[in-house]
Image (cartoon, rainbow, N blue to C red; front, top):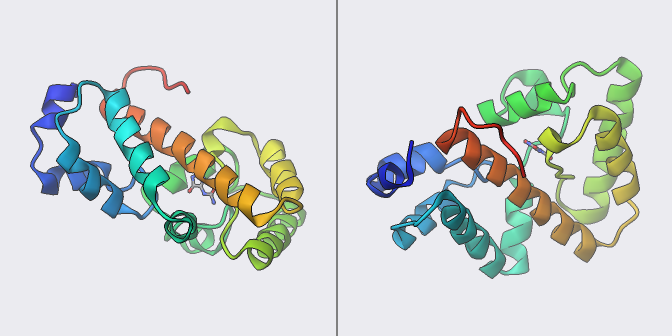
Length: 174
Ligand SMILES: NC(=O)N[C@H]1NC(=O)NC1=O
């Protein structure tokens, strides 16, 4: 799909296509549709990032709260978004040993208790060992640092999801 085809999409189709590049936040795609035409995919990505950056802190934390826990209840009950399911499976988060699963569940809870939003990391760019180490280390950060870090990870996730939608045959890189 080239950028002129993206620019020609009516907003309903645009939101259907890009509504989950930011997990469970179709509002973001609906908002940036008015910024068309985009000269390139990178400028569509930049418009999304700009929209996120302009949100107040509560809005940024709201975006983080729309993310499912890694290896959490949604994965077990099969209610993850297709994007998230594929990403979590690729990193092996759907095949943890019972010891790993209970460690991750404990750390996810500790993280949420401390910060009031879930741990978010771009799982496509990390392996399982990395994810668990980051989860345990990032529990020690401040809330402000973690909110900023979570949003950086959201931007990596959305970049890879955009590339997969618009350039499905190209190698995806950050
Ligand atoms: N909690 C969290 O990081 N979730 C995610 N990360 C990712 O790459 N896809 C997700 O759904």
